[in-house]
Length: 227
Image (cartoon, rainbow, N blue to C red; front, side):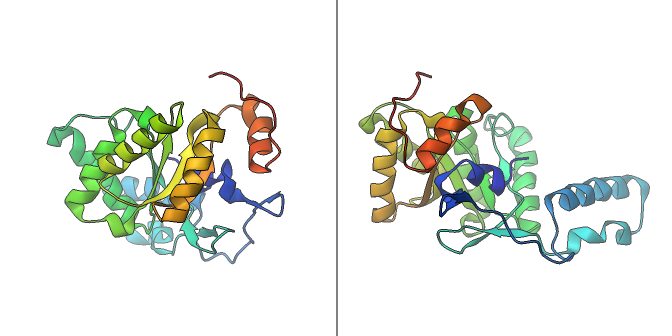
């Protein structure tokens, strides 16, 4: 499961005064990611064994949140990734379990759903499920732009908005730093226009972290490596 921290860690949102944001330690009350997973496993086991509800009492605690430094908005630490798992067809047999996943996410006070055009049919599936459940107001939608060229990037992002059935994307990121100079300029314009709320950059390989950091700190002066 992908968390909002994962989605934001390698983004422009995670930086403040040249430092990566770290949340303050809180009291034992909020539910952590590890606690959430442990409670989920316990709940599943309880369904099989008939264990008392008290054994999974942690699931009743409020979910831990982290604050986005640029806005002060608090975001739950547990979210939902869609790579492979949401790349399914239109049949109820394929989609019903995914609808239950989103229902469980929202019931547990989670909100972030992370996707990308790279993930096949995932954006469309997420959009259909959220529309069917009228749960757009519960979701923090994050997706990415993954192509080269300004016009191509705009077309891809507009298609993502159509698939997700939302004229506002909470977080739009440049996927794997692909043509990031071009796309960041567009994303800044879109944020000013109110089409996206946050923008960022991502990568998944450790070999790209130095370049990622340079982009985040605004000192990247060398061309990106081909990908």
